[in-house]
Amino acid sequence: MPDNQEIILARDEDSTLQHPLFKLNHWQWWSLVTINILFLLAGQAAAVLLGRFYYDQGGNSKWMATLVQTAGFPILSIPYFFIPSSKDPSTASTFRSLAIVAVIYFALGVVIAGDNMLYSVGLLYLSASTYSLICATQLAFNAVFSFFINSQKFTALIFNSVIVLSLSASLIAVNDDSDKPSGVSKLEYILGFLATIGASALYSLLLSLMQLSFQKVLKKETFSVVLEMQIYTSLVATCVSVIGLLASGECNTLRGEMDSFGKGRVGYVLTLVWTAVAWQVCSVGVVGLIFMVSSLFSNVISTLSLAVTPIASVIVFHDKMNGIKIIALLLAFWGFSTYIYQNYLDDVKAKKRQAELNQASNISNC
Image 1 (cartoon, rainbow, N blue to C red):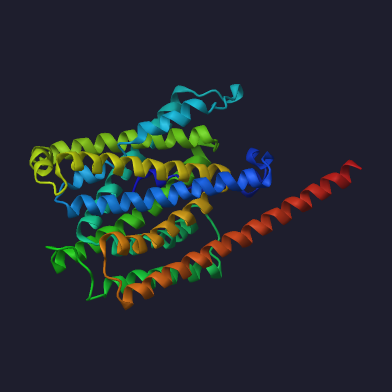
Image 2 (cartoon, rainbow, N blue to C red):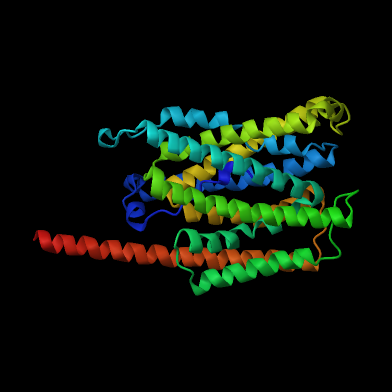
């Protein structure tokens, strides 16, 4: 899972309602939101399928699969340099505050690299459809960690979502008729399942820690600051992945891996390049939805992509879709639906609250 999906932050209700993009007219706003949704859905689905394709065609380097998840981060510098950063002279950065931010970015980057490695192990031993269904549990983990770390409320609908998504993953775990990739043993399949579950939990913990960082340290959430966090944490994660690639000795096998790749040397390079690009396309969609709508909405759409990817993998890789996996898919959509409905209720409540405040303000001015 890319760090590009990492910055899913809980936005304060009032600041969301005062978002500058609300100045766009209805159709302009929805057009931009739709484009970002397509970027996220297409980017994440393509990245997962290309990652599975890399392994199917003879790729075997887990550190290389980890590296490509963040190595395309320079693409994000293009929008970053065109977005003016808001400088507040009254809150000038001190050396101490910069050092604290640097430590946070470094720590998050290291965690992201470890999380991406767990996802790479999971995708190595699982089919794309099974992997994506298990990854959908990140929404349930996110709700739990947000409750304990970020003091977000745990409603009946959120509780239902957690239970249903957990059941979905449990069905995959006990599925004896699983479509394991060729050459994968039962033990390796279990390892892949546990690695993916662990990665989903770690990813959700990462999101809550990032939200805490924005609330307690950065204390602002502009588009430029969100991009900064992605770029710098991706830089650290990429460096850690390169060190891991060198230290593990996998770098010595890359030439042989390229020569034996099913689609040839050019196909090998293009697979890695387009995987890196796909993760960054996904990243643009994630950041865009965070900036235009809310971080929760971005997280929900990301989870929807994980629920849609199994369908794409059936078409592309002809993965088996037995009865248990179909039920697991339906449960994933159910969990997603209850979560987004809770988001809708919160949005209605926030708008009602803002309308009441505006009405009270108008009355007082009169």
